[in-house]
Amino acid sequence: MTNILNQIPEHAPQELVTVLLSAKNVRIERIVSFGQVSPEGFWYDQAENEWVFLLEGSAQVQLADQLVKLAAGDYLNIPAGTRHRVQKTATDGRTVWLAVFYT
Image (cartoon, rainbow, N blue to C red):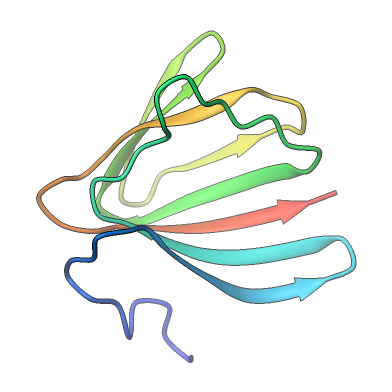
């Protein structure tokens, strides 16, 4: 893959995750959401830091104490151990994330 926005369908029944790079202390993924959200009551609580950049679409990420609304071009750093969940992604198109997990 040479363009992160290539080879993405307009719709899919489930979220699509593609690992773009994996090395000792870092993993980079392209995540494409089509209205998917975290399951009710589920919270991520990861041992690694996560930096997300929204390339296309929109999303809302619920942190323990705040709701962060993201539009194309916005980014968010989530420190390791920070409980969070995806509250909303665009339902009228795709949401394309670049997620960098690092220690």
